[in-house]
Image (tube, rainbow, N blue to C red; front, side, top):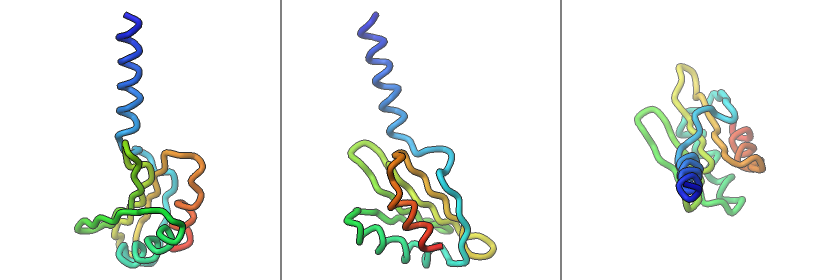
Length: 106
């Protein structure tokens, strides 16, 4: 029974690591389009020796930093009626450079 509970706890924790957070850490608004915003943030993250990946949808851009298990940090920039709405999702508490790159480009 103890082994079963340990395995269940491990799987529960692992599932939490594999999913993107539901609530953004930070929500921002900018006059830039999602494309312009992503073009500003990507070089800032690359200059900090981070390895961001960029994906594009019809109305949004997603910049993510992944670990071996999950996407730990995500910036979503969605097209708004004026400019963009930006949402930053972070798993780690000590991730100031990631959030700061988003704030610098607003």
